[in-house]
Length: 265
Length: 158
Image 1 (cartoon, helix red, strand yellow):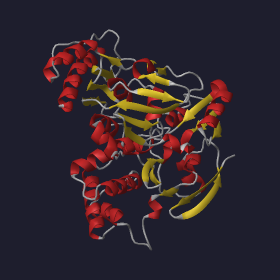
Image 2 (cartoon, each protein chain N blue to C red; image 1 turned 180 degrees about the horizontal axis):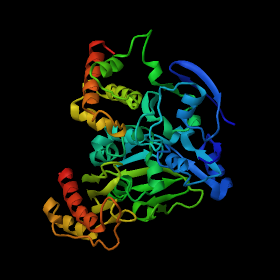
Image 3 (cartoon, helix red, strand yellow; image 1 turned 60 degrees about the vertical axis):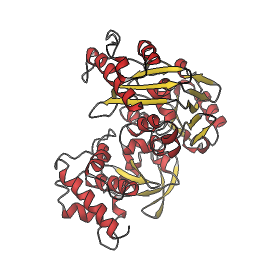
Image 4 (tube, one colour; image 1 turned 135 degrees about the horizontal axis):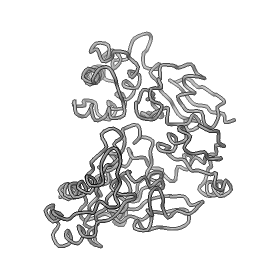
């Protein structure tokens, strides 16, 4: 790991200030389950590492007004084991329980996961599939506008994710085909029936999370696993690597969508 | 350079570290607690698992400064007065190790599981061990050890 200047701000305002003054060399760390391995491999060389770990206000789960709001520093284990999340959005608790391994879940945070926007991460499917809103220190960003591409988001330099709020759906299910070694998603699907219609979000398959509008339309008419039968996603722009071909990923989208709807009931 | 203070196995310790010093480096290289192992160094193998404020974490994937003020527990803290912890005893009784390299992480991970689930099924143990790799045993005896260790802990009221 290259050297960096470690900072641990005591308030969100101080963190934002530190991040702005560090400029391009500033990097935020929360649980560090992606960033620390990246630093160890010298794939990143921040001048300043700004640790959000001291901002205790950013951790915690609230359920009110038909929304589950999860602070950015809340760990995956906390989301998975939260009785409130399990009751309001069991699919979200299940998603969190399937991330990485127990030790990763004890450190990794929702804010870090969404800000990192890994194409194979679980949370992007949860955020987009449930039509969540990402809160930052400057504004709120709707899920559909948040993830903009491979490891890229709508976050501006100096902007810090503070929470993600999920409207409680009528029904939701999550199904994941994990890479057997890393537990990242080869393909995973969050399908939800919400007050604003059906949403089907896919992670792992493409460079960034995406919705399958054709499945959403079919499920809007008939919320049943069979409704997505025969709806194909074109492999043209999907990911291809040693783990799975684009064609296989395209196939898995249909299988995972079906399983997600089965899980939702 | 940052100063850190924490308790390790109940004892207060302070050290000067670099921002980039990993928790496992502090434990092994500065505090001499070499029971915590570095296996893969890429956050996958779990040989470095310790507890921070009661939760199992990979100490190769946490900065020492991030553990400032925390209570850290390592494999060295388990035995009391020369008597092995029931989970350690169970690994010995059930031949839960061959080379032993992964064992400290396995034991620390197992103890976190037992905290949540005093009587884990074989499937639950196997799922929990997602983040701990063993290259010798094929896991069968590790799973057996953890179930036996959990049973012994229930018996001992721990």
